[in-house]
Image 1: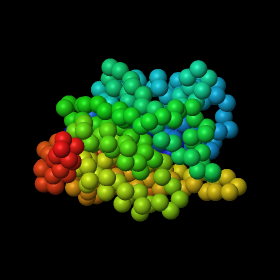
Image 2: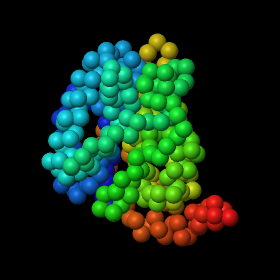
Image 3: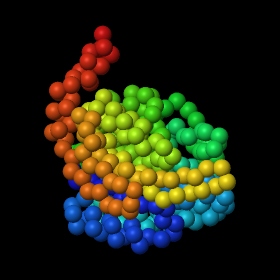
Image 4: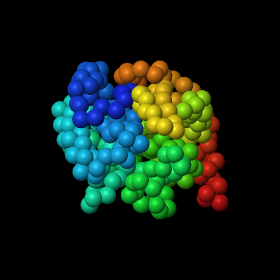
Length: 265
């Protein structure tokens, strides 16, 4: 399976870079392309200052563009996007495939005093359900937002689904570089699957904080190894993943077999 991460800053209403990079990815045989959080929309703190009408206009424009790109280039494009339904604002990750579109509503949102997505967005607070799982050419993906990677409840659903790769769009910032890398590699190892992470770049500053989005989009192996990663610049990262490597890692470590025995006893 050949996939790619497009590491960008917020693009606003412009689609030029999306067109250019997706055309390049298509020529390289990419089947799945992943974007980071707050690329199709402004960063959360900026989003809070916009009207619902403006957020909706921007979302409808970007959705139209990505549907066309997915169909034109026969590619599945995974893109976090803020949408409006019945006058309320929701944080989602959209899967634009050549023939259909699906939306995953983020289930666990940041709720810190200086960054309270849970309060702003209308996403329902309920018992955690399975993330969005889908196949491309027999290779099984799951979509999870970056923040959700911290929570074991998310993985209780993924473990039983035989996922080959978790697609992880994120918006990591501050001094979290090493912690995020350690978390991603650990989750990839304990669940013996690839994790493909797309983190945005750019900066946002208000009177209290400065958000520096440092990139470091990466691919972790089913053995918990760092296979590929980017720096902090705009870039396209193309990666190859193997279902056979996932199976080998699961047989070698036996975590799933041990868990299944305990659940059946």
